[in-house]
Image 1: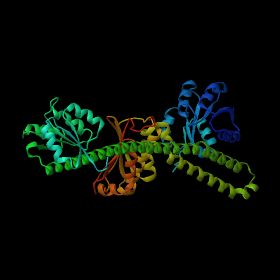
Image 2: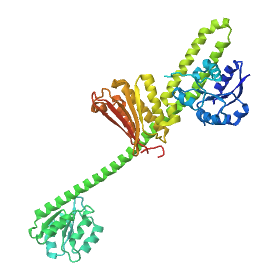
Image 3: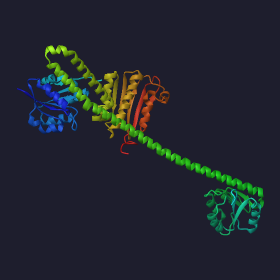
Image 4: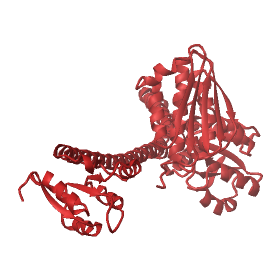
Length: 132
Length: 370
């Protein structure tokens, strides 16, 4: 059965990139996307996603706040946090708050599909790049 | 009236004495006479004497009371007394009389001498007063300018921090996202092209990928240097934790943390500034102290916030370094902190480590609100 992915990133160029990449995977389909946490909270439940990909830095409510809200509202939803900053020192905190994975944006082309597969397989995923 | 005429006001109720004095002086001075205090007072309004000769015993009021009226206008008063009464002389001098003369010993020479002295003395006093006034005005103006300069400099510093944050955000929100996009597309090409085509463009793809990766790294570094994202989202204290980790990762220095507060400045720009200073001081440890350990502590003390960077390294003579205008950047940090009512306190001695403390008021002397 196809797994449903919901994308939240305030940058259109990134949402498009994720779409292109996810489409290559035969078992994944995109069930919705949003440019802000606020917009996502309006329709994410109706989209029935299995996994949500959240950009850490969103315009008003940030990714971590959204993670906490979703954790209460949709406890069975898988969450992959993506960050353009080097937030690797927050990874433990992010995973402790209920995320199933953390992916650095520059690793997304090579690791996104792998990260999603690992999460669906029941593992916690973490990509850690050292930005100088 | 000829120019160099000296006008005297002679206040004297005794006709004989008045006549005697007039005779002694009329060859050289223009003399206006007043037999009573009342007449003298009306004369003050109409003439401006260069000097007053005053008999303190007058029929209407105590002559000494007239003295301050003249001295306030910088007109010298010479008191003439009938007898040598020390109390009267002391009183007269205390009230501002320039000199006194005993009537029984009056001579032309003594009078002329006393008058020219009195006029010269009061002139000097007047000049001193004018200069003091001028100095006071200049001091007030200097203080005002000083406040203005500090205000401008602090506004400039905050504006610089704001600009850094703005550039940092542009880098992150726009440039970096485009680079991520390029990276993703390059990856797609890599996946999509047929093996034959791939052989031809492989080198270009590898090159684009490498360049994009480098550009992402460069923008990330610049974003962080300009204004660490953690500072924007989590405040100064969290940013210092992050800084400690970065220093360990990138400069192999173990920074022990002693954080006793979670105070947050209302002004983000000021947080950035203090964070930069803390980072610069840690870099000093890396560059100069020759140690692998340092301690970063943050605490509140009354209405002040203290950020200390301490090491057990080689230290230095504080006098020497602090006097060098660019010594360790410490001087510049101190100057910029002063703009906000803060200061940098440095304790160090050769072979005895260094403790540099950024000490800033929690409520700013020159905040943005002003």
